[in-house]
Image (cartoon, rainbow, N blue to C red; front, side, top):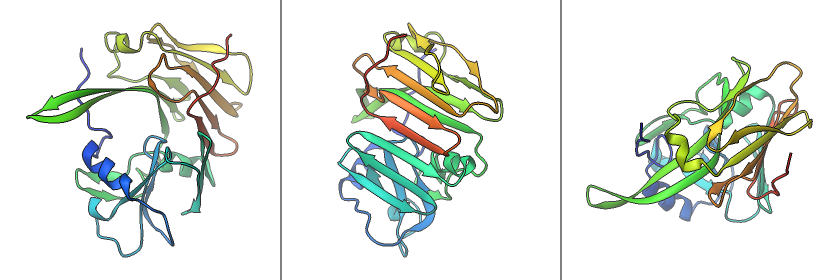
Length: 237
């Protein structure tokens, strides 16, 4: 099985995203009908009176310096490569960190309502490619899914054994409630593990093997907060 060529995100072509991010500035009140962080690297938002759909949606990337915002019931901050997202409760946090209801050129809603899963794209590989005579990008991501309804953590399809080969040098360790480090993924092969009502925090430490992504991801269920570190020393077990 081979990975399909995806768009940069499930709903937005790379060229449109790059153009939108280049000039985005957050200033003044927001229209909270669109307020999402689909992959923990950028914010999608609208200002009052802006057109419907993609044309009226703005973007703020977290890689362009310090950033702090409290709006629409959320607090987002980015300082020195550490970005955090906090909500009033876990359900609102899951909705924030999801892809909004969308067509290719239209957007609506603050994510699918009543999300039960958190997907963390821990490692990303971007390859130049060509499609219909134009330069495009093949983007491959190594997802970790925290499924609160099923009460477990896993890496979903379509990442079959063959797909893992491009991430064979990636290692991911995790801890629950600050406890002992355990292996989540090694040699391209993930495990799965259960969570329960006693699970307060989940920490993932990622050796990306030179690829893009995060060095650490912390999911704080009690505080309804997710924090990601671009770079973080990889702890040994």
